[in-house]
Each structure stands twice: as C-alpha cells, then as structure tokens.
Length: 278
Image 1 (cartoon, rainbow, N blue to C red):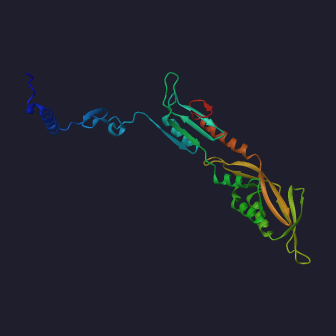
Image 2 (cartoon, one colour; image 1 turned 60 degrees about the vertical axis):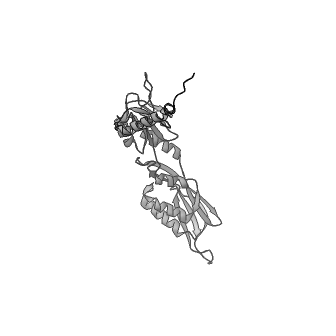
Image 3 (cartoon, rainbow, N blue to C red; image 1 turned 120 degrees about the vertical axis):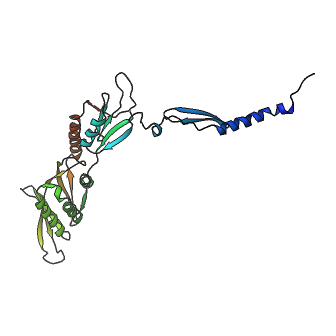
C-alpha cells in the first residue's frame, strides 16, 4: 500500500518560503565595499550592483576627453601637462588645425587614443571682412564706409591718406563720372561733373591709388600679416563702382599657419606628422 504525504507535509514548501522571507527581513544591512561588483538573487531575477565607477571609488581609471584651444601658447601649456613618451602630434593645413593624441599607441603596447588636444585656429573678424569684399564691386558709399570702418588695417598709403580718399569718394557719390586715366604716380584719376543739369556743371577729379597694402591678423591671437590689394573699378552710365582684389590671401593664411606650426614644433618633444589621427 502506497503512503501519501499528509496535508501538513504538502504545504511545507509554502511554509519554507515564509521562513525564508522572514529571515531575509530580519537580516542586518551589510555595507558594500566600493570597487567591487555584487550580485543578489531576488524574486524577479539576479540584481547586480556595480561599485567600480569613479563616483564610488573617487578615482578615474585613466585620462580621457577632447580639449580645443585657440592659440599655440594654450596648446603647448596643455601638451606639457599631459604628454607622455607615446604622445603623437598631427597637423592639417587644409583644416588649419593641430591635434595631439596624448594617449597614443606605444611601440610595444596599445593606447586608448581618446585623450586628445586640438588647436583649432579661428579667423579674426577683420580677416573675414576683407575676404568678404575681395573681388566685389560696390557703390561709392558702401566702399567709402568700408575703408573708414577698417582704416586701422591700412598701412600704405597711411591711414590718414586713405581716410581722406574715403571722404573724397563719399563727397562725389552724386557726381557723374565721365572718364578715367592712369597717372605717372601710379594713381587712377576719375573725372566727374557734379551738376549735370546745369549748362556748366562743376567739374573735378578723384584720384585713387591703384595699389594699397593692409595688415591684418588672420587668426585670433596671431600676429598681423600684410597683403597687397589692387583697386578695381567700373563706370556705367556715369556711376562709379569700386572694389579691390587681394593678392594671394590663401598663401598668406598658409604662411600664418606655418608660423604657428613652427612655434608648436619648437615646444613639443615629438616630430609633427602631416595628416589626421585615426
């Protein structure tokens, strides 16, 4: 004859769980140690507690991050603080940038490559203004205002002479220009009549140098670089349009970048590679 368990024995699993639950509730809290990973079995599955992060240990496992600076002095200061024997430096003339991989691969072991310093040169407002008008022809008033607003960039002829020219251009905005000729001094002379409705209008001449020079810093924190500009003009139905054409501004910006790169090369302990880091 088979013996079956009594009803009291059948309910034993439930009673056992109740005992377990009571025991769990009466357990004293246990302090977990930072820097370790813990796993707990719960009614809904395994619960993991990771205490290895810097918010628990108070320590960073390694340096990471990407820092951008705007001049060579700042680049060299950060580089000197964080470089090691495996640090690599790259230059990109098209992007006008220099990048240091401060935790690059060493010859005998890999590096993470995620602690980087970048010099990103930012053009000055003045440089941008001159390039915007480069090669364009505008009316006399706009051209004269531009010269007046940027008079401190004009070096040859000097600022006082160029200011006088700008004021002369403004004074003849309502005149009718009839002819132009080139003087032996290298200036361009424009002949005009101020009152075309009168039988004998007031006549005059406006002289403008065919070539002038400016000195502008290409980048924030950089030295000034000189450029030659040639006056451009067009007369149409008595109206005079003026402008200028800068001579090789791209070469000036490359020369300025080369000077910045030379300053960095003198302050770093590794050859500068031409290219972009992976």
